[in-house]
Image (cartoon, rainbow, N blue to C red):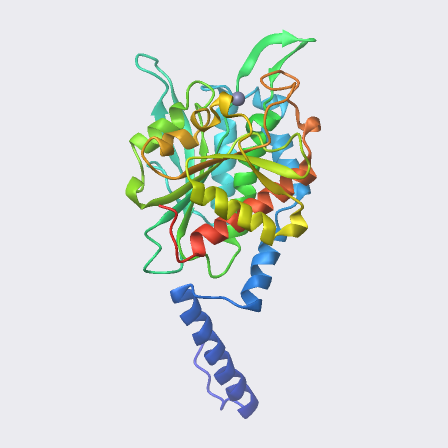
Length: 334
Ligand SMILES: [Zn+2]
């Protein structure tokens, strides 16, 4: 645009002045991240409502589709799933958090001539004093692949385990990316591979972190969140603080109709059985969120039509509010 040669009318000058004051306030707010009050609450509620059962359902159906072949580590279907997550992270405007763009490749095992992808994207926090701390959301995108047929079906689709958690991490990333200004701490979103063969991808990530482990405030890991109770979600956590905050958030968001239940199955040792353990073993506060086992667990019948998309959306919204609290509060869990 060229320099204006005509004199700006008075009303426009006034509008511009008001605009610049508002702009300055927004800039000041976005610099400190210190945005509270009704407008901020409205923006946060709107972002949470962007997490919908329709979008979650589409993502779960895509990831758990027969064409993904059950996403074994390694497999072409797993690579296709990783490429989808990369494309989505890019579309949301996340920063690449891998060591090759969004991707971090890891060897599957000693002497095994294959590697597999983790996908990592992140959002920088708005508070210069806190943005060096990270809240990490994660879910494994791999499953069991093609195996022994059951009732003529050999594709282990892993819709609940764990297309549900992967889809939720995508929805969380989208919701946080749409919030302006972002929360005070930085947020990291990871889709791991190799979970089903021994937490290989998450162990590799925490052994070869792309951010300092000491700066990770908490890991919130989602594994199988789409089945069972419609009014509750289970957490298995290494941190009583995370349990307490999750329960407070569930009470504050009563319209979601969800209770947070402390792990009722200690004999299953859930804390060691999904990717949060890769963080917990380093002393990082970690929490698994899950709706628990069911008859289709690790069966070809774990398919998208068995998933309660509406409940999954409420769980994901709850975790969005938990993430807001962890990333915006004065107190760090770590
Ligand atoms: Zn599994």
